[in-house]
Length: 274
Image (cartoon, rainbow, N blue to C red):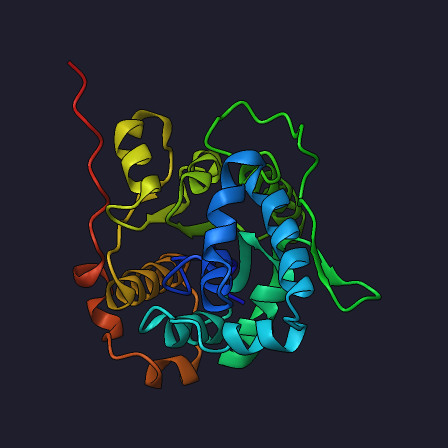
């Protein structure tokens, strides 16, 4: 095992849009959603929308079929498979919900690449209606207003970090796009890497607060760039720690091993203090 943990956000990091909006739009409930949006927190609203869709005759099967045609960021699936083949421990931390994420990952054939999915719980009740619950109590205590009331990803990362210390895994790579990915980025340590999606909310927050980020920062714009940067970071860590690359990995990526350090993307420079 490489001793590397790669943590992915889900919406706009693996799939190329917001899964909640995708389901609502595809099932024709956008107008109702927009009317209710100002009246309650997002997580509570999604639970309410599942009730409304159920009353309109939409089934779990209808939702699953919509999820199976969700647009996926190009090159992300092979990047995940390659990272898994390198022996990385892959996890998801997302403000979506477990039914959406598991349905999509299984459809893409990458569900078993992940050891853990941290997200809002959901279940199908006795009436066949999807219920969506908050991951955290609405008073989770995080001091950053970038975290929604139902989930602080920073608290999730702290729990993961505590478990990694016991397992002997030393390095973490975090990929995300949204404002909710800023708090976990702050939890990354000097030996870690943060991969924010360029020109998305977390990119802006990190650029405005670089003095708070201890990890090395490598931005990405699309799936090809995400794959290239992620795999080069993984290879560089493995070489740095004098571990051998698994033979099967040598045939799954097109980046020469002896060019890792030349190809390694440069971390974003910290602003010069005045």
